[in-house]
Image (cartoon, rainbow, N blue to C red):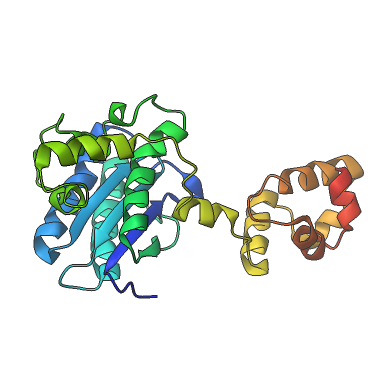
Length: 252
């Protein structure tokens, strides 16, 4: 769905939640790529945060479709990553995930959600303790070596006076909240049967799905127990795919 405002909350995740940033050089490279394509495509950047295995971006579409811009950034980073770590294959989980931002209230909520991501993950105690987000740039405590952030647009929603706008922004940005944005909605989503089948296949490794119900009881129950830890997978789906009873899964 196209956003009427042209603004989107974007999330890129490592395949199977693998780490995509291993050191400072990786983070800096990703930010450099965003800067390169910001200049080329005139994309607006209102908030960002790099975590070890995922990225949050709050962007406004520039002079090309945002999916094209994200593809350019993703392909360039994967090329760098594979060269540096001598790897091949996929790095990111599918294409990027996104949600439309259609009003100012939710726009500001997403800015705060992105900045509070490291705090809610238990990595830091304060939002401005995390180096790899736009928070410090909003707070004026970190000079950007590249002009990434379009902070004036957000500050303008708090006040026409820059000093007062920053004070009000900091107060809003640090509010205790129960914000639930894109990441929560994705984690709450149920897997389709096709997705569930692929996840179970990876869990089974060399064992075929059809063989599970005939395995020795202890081995079978150990597998069923592990399936209960898969996010988005219901026990009813597991029972249907593996050909066992839902009761058997519940008791494992």
